[in-house]
Image (cartoon, rainbow, N blue to C red):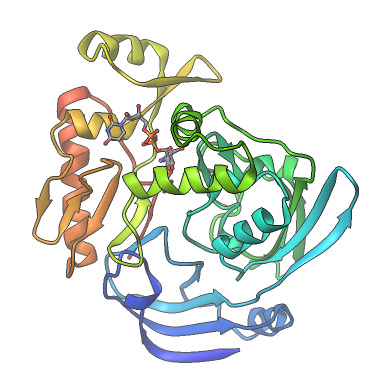
Amino acid sequence: MKIFENQQLIEFNTFKVPALCDRLIQVESEGEIPQLLQGGFFDAPYLILGGGSNMLFVADFHGSVIQMLTRGISVIEESEESVCLEVAAGETWESFVDFCAKNHYYGVENLIGIPGLVGSCPVQNIGAYGVEVKDVISSVSGWRISTKNNFEVANKDCKFGYRSSIFKTDWKNDVIITRVRFQLSKKEHFTLTYQGLMKEIENQNVTLNIENIAAAVKRIRDAKLPDITKIGCAGSFFKNPIVDNFVKDKLLQQIPQLVYYPVDGGKSKLAAGQLIDLAGMKGVREGDAGIYPFQALVIVNYGHASGCEIRAFYQKVQLKVYEKFGISIEPEVNIIG
Ligand code: EPU
């Protein structure tokens, strides 16, 4: 393992905001974790960092930041129909999706282009274009920090929900995820429920196959979302709010074109992007913080915005939406500090 004291984190978060941490610990093999757990590193504040693509530092972090650098994709079980892959937490999501597309393992092609590491994907149950990662995860392994024991939780016990899981709720800040197992289909199988995806494939007039679907998702993403290698951001900044149906019905009177999706328990999920857009905030910029002009859910750092400036800006966006529609929108991104 490598330990760096007083480390600058600007290169370790995709918002590209400056923040120092007392100590950065890079874990290079899973075998180092027991040593880390026994070594007192978790007695002071700590933060488990994935790709840094879902966090906003609003202050320096006085404690240890732990980063998993383990890599590797192994085939655990294979039949004619399906394959079970075990992937190390530090593998990038991008390289995993590429591996699956190349080998014609079906199930994650709609999730191409999502930044971050494999170890982070179960935490907020990443999702896009009709697929959530819970649809293909079979189990998640790692270590509990409080008990210093290792665990393997099966999908059904991960308490997956919209952008949520046990790792973000009951076990929040109490796990180091080391490996994720995925069950993928080897038989051609696509999810084309997201309207724009089928339309994009039809427009291109191409055969329906895994490469073309991945390419279509990529084009849709590129048209709406910034390239995080060029512009600071963390993907969708806000979660889509889930409200009672009577709230949705009331809002429909104010916004006839309201976008909503029914969810369990007499509730509806609204599109935060649409509400921000209709509140007049799309494309608005204050200093170096702003809403991306092509997707209102995304907050960007155009250059040198600090975490505090971005926080002040997103709170203004929340207030505008609340004043206009009476709906509270909450960050999907973790605010650190
Ligand atoms: N909309 C607007 N204006 C906007 C943005 C969206 O009116 O500026 C409307 C769209 O017209 C559409 C609706 O809102 O009718 C929903 O928009 P979209 O399909 O683009 O999806 P989203 O709800 O904005 C979610 C995920 C994205 C994911 C897309 C596609 C969340 C928080 N975000 O966005 O995830 O890529 O669906 O499946 O659930 C991410 O989490 O980082 C992310 C990018």
